[in-house]
Image 1 (cartoon, rainbow, N blue to C red):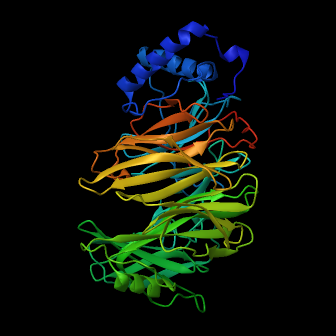
Image 2: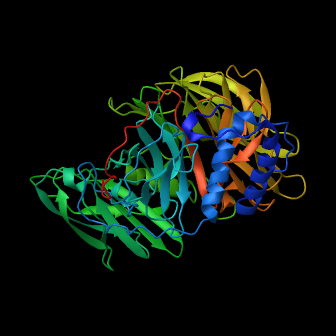
Image 3: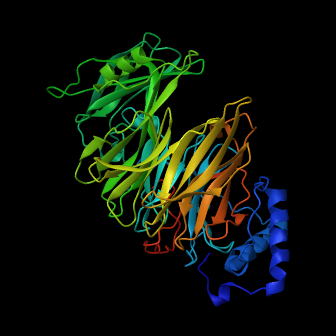
Length: 533
């Protein structure tokens, strides 16, 4: 496994010392993070891991040193930045210079529910916190643009400022500036042209606490006890209004199209039903022009789905009850041209759910992981969303039900790694998630990380060397699935040897995104990014 390095960044350890160093790292990892996966490993290539192990040891020594005096944080400002009105929680105002060893981005959860985007290199000092967003699970599913200039992520941040999504897609530059929501019909308030008028209406089916929003306003408003609402300062060109209500742990939502006539909006009626929708995951094509991802919708049954679809002017979603009176989710693929405006669903090829897509780094091909009643598939689509054909099929074993998820191409396009989530149903319900390798032609497959029951290796991504895969490692009770996990750390596995080592110690690190092999290194900036940009 090759890790970028320079002579002035490293001090070689003697060959005989590397087994002892590896043992020390393993002890540190067990003390500070999740337990080491139980699968036996081949003899590792210690020289190939030298730089990373040194950095881990240095990080351990740093952690043992007395804590530094905290750096005061700036007061959050409400002044919108030049590109967005989204407000970031304060970030540490320390200027940074990105090292040429910069390799990985990931999401780190904080004690107050905030999420941060973290950039790391080989050495501990090559660490930068780009931004923090307030709110639980604010950032998920991180991905780079192929040129390394931007990061794409999914977030529930300020979801009420989008037309109907619970989670939207955001882009931020690699220096932490230029944060913007790119889905949901979002228009920043400072860019919505006037004149500005009042929108009045009523929410039908309202329960509990309800908020109403409209395109281009700065913040939602509450409804009255009667269900009526008044929103001032709505741009005359606004095209939608939305309502979301929460009551006793339930969510009701709905939206409608609005259009001003003679400079006035007619009274608006918004029907809310129990359900929701949004983005789960997304990726950008190699030229950055086409976005594809997994979209979801949930509800309590077809009646609720039809009501939501009618209110939204969409086709009904395939949402059925789960048999126990709870909600059920449906996942499918969407594709859109960022500049062309082209938008379509991925062509339906199998009955089942889509769980993650990834663009090829060498062709205009999209791979997705589909799961149906009899097993799963890796499937290919072109840049228009048309089916190209099956790449690989993985049927369910006699004693297990499989879910395939989150495929990722190697930098040369010759291999893919993907999750195989296993539910052992014969007897006790037990869960685990393995990582599988398949050749680019789908002809050969092997297990890369075989987890114990209650262990999960998920969200894999390839490092630029083509021999290292980083992934999220979590633990659950053996009878609980991956969705129940409340912990996480980042691990890496060497494809050629199977050696596994921790990259972070957690306790809430997720969504690792390796820097793209073809990406240009970000340009350092002298000042930190503005907290409102």
